[in-house]
Length: 289
Ligand SMILES: [Zn+2]
Picture (cartoon, rainbow, N blue to C red):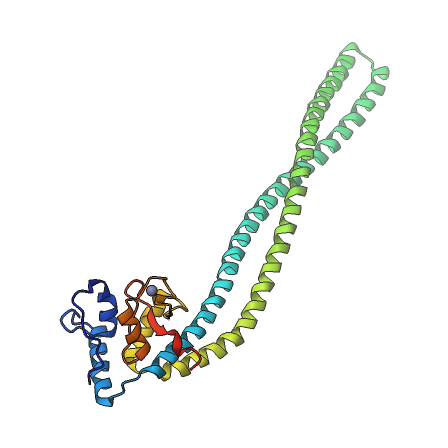
């Protein structure tokens, strides 16, 4: 008895399925996968095992495990990315904050220097004003007046700059406060997300470990060819490598399966993949058996 699915030349669409299970030596190119499948089918012939129920059940068990692993991957998938984005946004805000804070500090320094300077100028002006009444010559008087005038000029210039500084400082103060609030907010969100990820990591670490162990044991029940077939389909449909045949349809892609093929799938003597999507097909009668 031959376990190999007989080739139907009329079913051109079935090529993927035929290649996957290696039932058409005319079509299969000489490559690793194909030769492995051929190897498998000669094994089966040797073993003379007509029913592949156990293998199909292993596929279903693996599908269940892989769908849980895919869910974990999906759930964690978003968090690291959003943490990375927030971290980079935070660092931009912080560098903006540092630069504005630097400007503010240098303006505050300049303001204090100008104020000190003006105080000293004003003291000098007062002193000269007193001296004006004790001068002995017009020349001396003129000199004092000139000095006082130039000091006044200096004070006026400083005051105008001080006014300018005050207006810049009032804008900077608002901007810096806004940045501080934004940074605090972002950091809170960031630490919330980070602790959520840590929690998930911790939670999934154990879950994943259990799933991996179960997976290894399920995979070890398969021979090399079946494993190769399953892993290849699973690469395409994470956690959905096997599909159930329900009311003549593939549960993966909802396309209909020819009635004769449905009967063959139910007999579990050969392994078939869906002509449309490539998933491994399992008859619904097999669930729960
Ligand atoms: Zn399908």
